[in-house]
Length: 132
Image 1 (cartoon, helix red, strand yellow):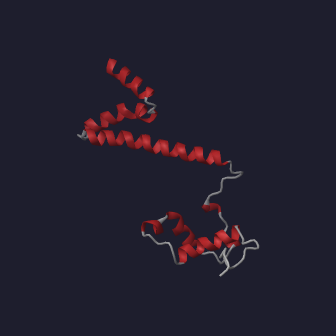
Image 2 (cartoon, rainbow, N blue to C red):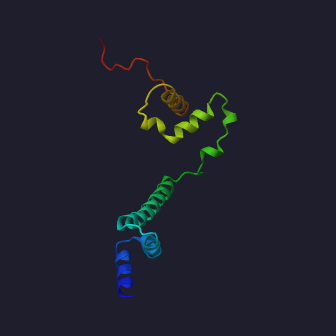
Image 3 (cartoon, helix red, strand yellow):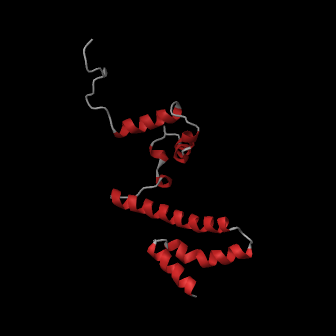
């Protein structure tokens, strides 16, 4: 019993609430399944990391102060028929980053969307600053 109290105290001090909530249950499961200490520790830390990532995402959304949170599943693709729905959904997965693709159709669609949001304003076509 003393170890349990001391462990909870340390976990609270280290600010590890998910581990505090789950260590006893995961310990019993690990013992029942003959898991190694590393597997048990990994299960504890996975829960803590997932919770912290979720909290960080919520915090960033709150700090952004968006007037309305919009998700891609609520986007009306019929309003823009030239937009390829499958391509947009594929781009949201981010596989092009793993494949190291930064040109072609993927880049072109981002450029089109960016220019639609940020049209060029009296910007000269020639970007040279110094005369020849």
